[in-house]
Length: 274
Image (tube, rainbow, N blue to C red):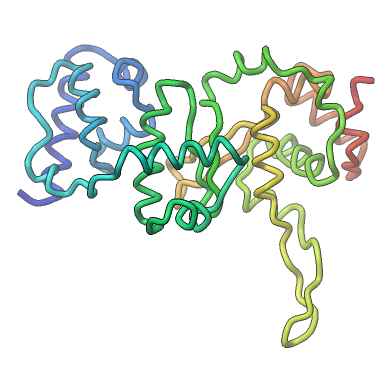
């Protein structure tokens, strides 16, 4: 059996059983404790499930067939529980880390780090957490569906002071409604000049650390765009951010920023409630 035939067989069986039960993707994902995005990719034959994920899915749908032998043969090599736990501990201890830093800390190749992070994501998903990887940095964050609950614990009065970088990033995400890191840095423009072999060159502002902090403070949320090339992370405003600004809707927040023109000082963004 070819690789494409194996994935097609899984996809067809999954769709057939889900349709027979009259369930939506969201219902199956909730029962199997996997993400809707992952389930959609498996059902369309674009991704092969891990052994762990397939056991959950077939258990939820009552599918008796195990993962086909051909699919077992293509499973990635085993990653130790110790590595997965170490990666989790490292990401809890720091706001974010690069793949190279995680590889250096754990003493394993980056390819193993990626596999370990994939397993960590599967283990954390039932606990409402996700592993975010924007291609250069990795961090832990709450699942988007729990942002309302998280918002209840965030106290805006503790977040009144924002740095210039944080205020700029928030202003861009508010005005755009949603934005990738690349788009944010494109709007922010060059930050510094560096003397290169042929004279001064413009360097884009790196927003990775700022985005990580804003995510950890619950002011932004992020999810992958499954339909865009490279599946980039897309950042959106959260209810705590609107509460911080003293508005109820994103449109009100945009209007407040538009009324101030291009100014994005920390005071204007963070002290708007005073």
